[in-house]
Image (cartoon, rainbow, N blue to C red; front, side, top):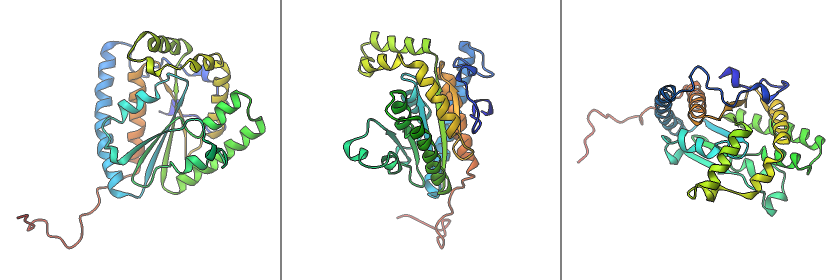
Length: 272
């Protein structure tokens, strides 16, 4: 995972990261099958660890998913989190802010959605949208962007110090792969509900978005809340990388099954 982690305050160039990378796995059906087996085992392990997280109730995990349109945020959640108990996991999708939300600071709506202790929270898009989209479309100045980056770092530091582990994933796809996925949405009647003509307009700003993502990750990747650039052209490898990192984060918490209630002799306990 180290080769995918963004070094804090580094000069980031996404062209140095191959969205078609598959690590030590070859780009063959056989390698894909082997990777899927590993991923399934990780998903099973994730379910076990999530139960301990929920039972202990003293830590939380926040997963942030960002990426270009069609990069696979929904697919990641559907696949990687398939073994998680819904009681202990909540997905939040941040859309355009409401009138009430606009009357507060840009992090006001986000802080309310941060996961409670014992929970896994998944931000499908996130507080970073309020910097990315506004910056690319020229709605905020460079000085405001820098200010918001600092405020985000302070916000994430607060969450971290309060017991929340933060993992941020940028799902990195190529422009050709995005074209392929958009065409699939157009041509497949079962997927047309996902298509939005606005996606085509945003695609014209591809280079602008890449630059904004580079600046964002370089400025806000920290030891407490690191960014990972996940190769996402191949969905099976994307799922493997993210499942591996999420499991490792939960294992690093060293969670143990809570002790049984004191004073109960379970060996002699009988239920009539």
